[in-house]
Structures are given as structure tokens and as C-alpha cells.
Image 1 (cartoon, rainbow, N blue to C red):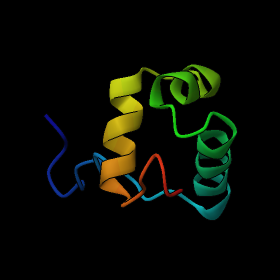
Image 2: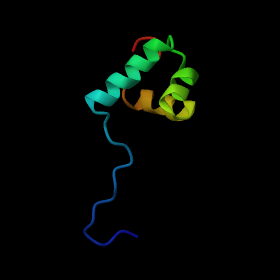
Image 3: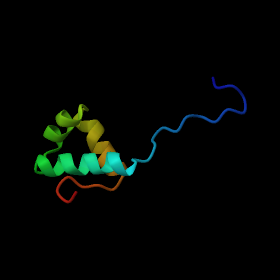
Image 4: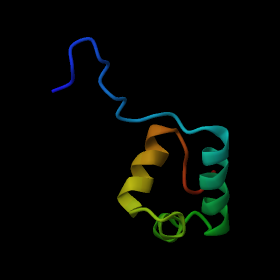
Length: 62
């Protein structure tokens, strides 16, 4: 348990501009292919899908 008065850690932090740009660029490079993009970014495709959904990004329109 967290000490009283301590804020719980945020589960998801917003992408900064560099991170968002990196994800968008990787998606473009891989033609919107989420699995290939995830591999290139060093993450699981489900993790990337959730990140895209959370931040309003689309594989084809990034």
C-alpha cells in the first residue's frame, strides 16, 4: 500500500511530442503494419494497439 497522502502513480502518461512522432514515423515506415511497427519499437503488438487507441492514433492514418 502507498503511504497515506501519496498520490497513486498514473497508469498511463501522455506521449510527449518526440514519442508520438517516433510512433507515427514507425507506422508510416511499416505501412501501418502494427506487428512490424511494434517489433521495431521493441514492444508487443497488443501494447502498441492499446497505446494507439489511448492516444487517438490510427495505423493507416498516422
